[in-house]
Image (cartoon, rainbow over all chains, first blue to last red; front, side):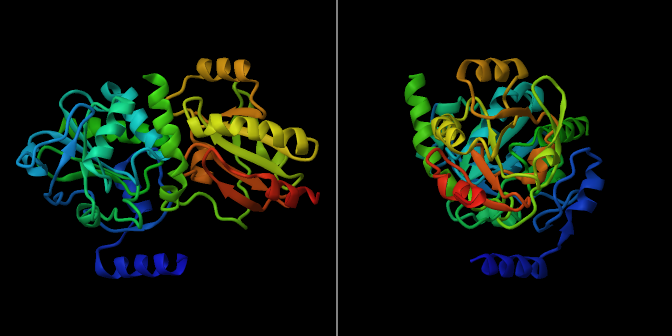
Length: 197
Length: 165
């Protein structure tokens, strides 16, 4: 199983542009330095691939003709937080921290979405349990996660992207440490930089 | 309402190890990193005081983590049984925590370990815990022999292994 995962990692490396995280961290200019891994997905400076996904919030589930569409949020800073699964303790830590520190980390004019393979019903319950103040998107076949280099085995890997108002990736952490306070500090700084333009 | 919410998180946390498998943690067989992490009073605690000297149990925990709460009685029982030979350390992850809140929790619940407060994330980056309630058991040579997460972990076999009992 581990060999399979390693093989798929190598194939992903060959099929896509691979970026060592050390170089990425330097580009980010942040103090937080993620552990070195080989990753794919849109690099810092490149256009964020557009996508459309259904969503739920703590109060409701979005109607079928009202999907979240990334390009509809041009002009705003967008944070995409891919995570493995609702109600798991690492994801609870991450979403709880985002919720508790929402104003400090993001602010009202930033669009934040969490993305996992869970159903909309699960998302609604998870968001209601924690009081999550933003949309959770359902990506059951990890189609979007794959485009963002975040596809995992049972659910997405824990990654974070910050996209600026022009639709370009300004920051990414391809191994976001949900239990590492410095990961949140680095994300906060990246959001502030993206908001400044 | 609060109890129902806690129960939902608790029940779901049982399944957390499944999703956690997609994340890494520290491999069994690896040398446990001897990082320095402050205690609740801010005093630096160098884990090399114990790692490589005697068996060590580390738990990455938080006061709001229901799996961690579920593990407390089990940890207390294990400490009772193996505490003379194994160093028990709880690394508070500090995410969505305050130092005062952790201090109050530790006082009130008499947690069965020495508490460290990983405000700089030094231990989190070294061990890459996939979840709160992540437990690492290290033998006297400093090698990881067990990792796991969740509120129903059976730690006794690994503790018997590292103590030779």
